[in-house]
Length: 469
Ligand code: ARG
Image 1 (cartoon, rainbow, N blue to C red):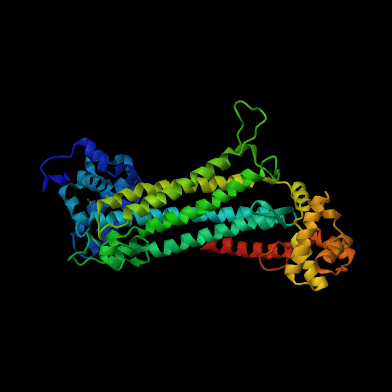
Image 2: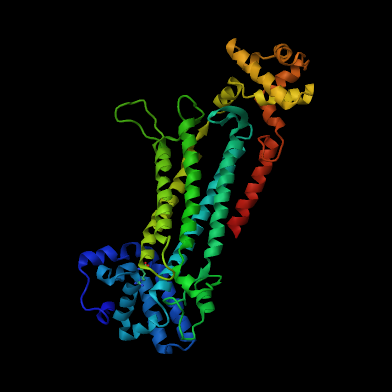
C-alpha cells in the first residue's frame, strides 16, 4: 500500500526518503507498535466500529508478525516509518481489509503511545538496576563501618569519616535518582491513543479500554496535548542526565583515590588498562570512559529541549527527531550504570591508608575547637581562632597533629585571649583521635557506626519495598 499515491504524484528521491525516514530508530518501538495496533483493533471490534471478522483477521496477522519479529517487515526507507511497515505487513497477509486497522487512529497518537510503552519498560529496567546498585553499596558499607578515611572539602583534608559513610552518600544520591524516575514514570503513565491526528474522532472509540489494554493508568485528557507533548521524554532524559552525573562523580573519585598520591582504593584489574609504552601502568580507563560517556546525556538533553522548544502545538515532524536522542541517552546510561556498579564492586578500600591520611593533616581540628566550646566554655569563633593559630604554629614548627597537647593549646590560647584553657590532657588526646571523632558524631546522617547502621537499615527497607512492588 503506497501512502503517497492518493494525494501526491511522485515518489521522494531515495536520498530524501533516507533523510526523513525514522525506520532505523523505530526498531525500538516495533514491539510497542504491534501492541498498540492490537489494543486499538480489539477496541474497534468491541465497539463494533469495524466488522468482527475483519478485526479477527487483523489480530491474527499481528500475532503472526509478533512471532516472526521485525525481520518479517519490509524496512525500505520509502516506507517512511514502522507504522507503515506494520500496516503493509498486515495488508500483505489479509489484503485491503487491513486498512480498517487505521480507523480512528493516526500515526501521531500511535508514535507517542509506542514511545511511552517502550520508554516505560526501559525505565523499569533502569530502576531494577538502580536497586541492585544500592544493594551492592549497602553490602560494601557493611564491611567498612569502621574503616577510617579522611573526608574532603575542596579536595583538601577536612574531617575524619568512614568508607561506609562515604559509600552511603552514593547510595542516597542513587535513591534520589530512583525517585526522580518514579515521578517521571507516574506522570507519563497516561495514554495518548485515541487523540488520533489531533482532535480525536467521531467514531465511538473507548479510550479507557485501549489505555487499560496497554497498561496505562488512564487516557491523556486533551487530544492536542496528546500528540504534541514530548516533555515526558525531556524529563526522563533529565532524570537520566542527573543519574549520569552521579555515576560520573563516583568514577571521578575512584580515579583520584586510586592514584599513587591517594592510594585509598585499588580497582579490579578487569576494570583497568595498562600503557603500550609504560609497562608499570595501571590506569582507571573504565572510570574515565564513564566520566566522559555520561557527558553525552547532557548533550542529548539539550538537543531534545532545543527541538521541542517553540514548536506549535499538535504534531510536527520535528518530533520524530527527538526519538534517536532519547534512545542514545537510555542506551548510554544503561551500560554506564551497570558498568559503574561492577567497577565500584571491584574496588578494594585501603583502610590503613585511609587512617594514615585521617591522622596526618589536622583533620581533627574542628573537634578540637568543639572541645573548647564544650570544656572551656569558649564561643565557637574564639575556639576556631585558637585552633587555626595552633595549626599554623604547629606547621611552622614542623609539628604533627599528634604532637599537639594541652600545654601547647594553653600557650596559643594565652596569646589570643589572655587566658589558658586548662583542658584535661586525656580529653585533648581523645579529641585528636579520628576513631573517637567518628564515634562521637551520633547525629542523624553522621558517620558514627550506629548511625550508619540505622541508615543502612532504612536503605535496605527502601530496596526491599521497591523490589517487591
Ligand atoms: N515517524 C513519525 C515520528 O516518529 C511518526 C509519523 C507521524 N508522521 C506524520 N507525517 N504525521 O514521529
